[in-house]
Image (cartoon, rainbow, N blue to C red; front, top):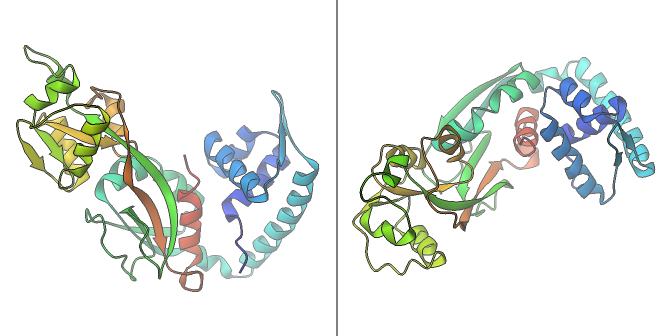
Amino acid sequence: MQHLPPINALRALDAVARHGRFVKAAEELNLTHGAVSKQIRQLEEFYRAQLFIRTSTEVRLTSRGQRVHKAVAEVLQTLIGTLSEGNQDELSGELRLLMPPAFAAYWLMPRLPEFTTLYPEISLKLESSPEMLREPDAAIDVTVRYGRPNWPDRDVTLLRDISLFPVCSPELTLGRNPLAKVSDLKRFPLLHEDSGALWAKWLVSARAGMQSVKSNHYITDVHQLLIAAREGLGVALGDTVTARHFLKSGALIRPFKNTIRSPYSYYVISGKDDQKTQRSQAFIDWITTVE
């Protein structure tokens, strides 16, 4: 079966084409301007063509965009007619989600009201598990996992690649013996979410040249790891997804600029197409396009 673009991206194309402005389209769809822009970029990558001409005052369709929009508008009208005939039940009822606690708390929750506004008839049942590589549960509709894509019997979509960098309480950079340079890390406990391989990789990239550190603590749940760093237990490796909340509030800081690419990424996992409900597909389309 030929791969099709996400339905939410097609809705964004239709809204932008009708309004001629991203802001108006975002208002209609209850999305942010950035989310609509991202969906349009995804469509342009899918069709390998520019669909809109963007100026400082308006957005208008290219000739290719006009042809695509005509087809999209017809498809959307057909879908609306079908839903009005009684298939709306597919976009209502319970949607079962499973994801890591830190991802759920610090990335998903600030964005989730957008999804519930789009699909008010869907009831969410969210479970969390800190187990990074736990096998996806068939009883769960959509799973978000931090790991490597090794689930051949499931549909797997890359959600986020992440970078890692040291984070700590601001208190550790103050006082008589502050954390001021990379070599100072040997005087502070290091907090690990794994056996120590990630910190070892970062220390090599930063050319730390350290033979030993004061102590090591191992906390496999990223949620608890970040809280431990916030409370001053030591220095952790934060990532671009889950540490953002703490950095924005000032509860954690980045003492050094060096970053490394994590060997793991966040993935969205679900059943194959013939096992997937419209509720699941709607959530997948949304989570993979939201900023």
